Length: 93
Image (cartoon, rainbow, N blue to C red):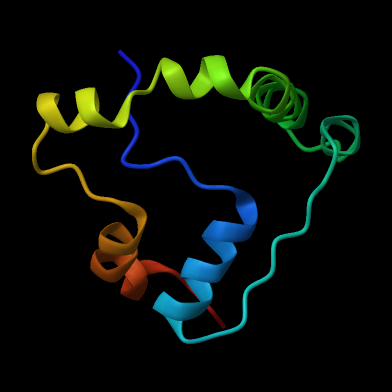
C-alpha cells in the first residue's frame, strides 16, 4: 500500500522548510547518476529510487493516492503539520 500525505517537489519542500524552520533552505537537484557516485552504503539504491521517482513520477504518485491515504489514516499529516510537530527533532547546528 502506497501512502502519501501530499506530493511535493524538492523546491516546494525547501520553501516549506524555510518557512517552518525559520531558516533559508534551498533545493539542490542532483542527478541520479551523481547520487549513485557518492559512494556511501546505499547510494546506489537511493540513486535508483530517485531515478524511478523522476522517470515514472505519474505512476509513483498514482500508487500513493492522497485521498486514499487519508481514508486509510485520517490522522495522516501533510508536510507542514509534520514539520511543525517534528521541527525540534531536526538538528540545525
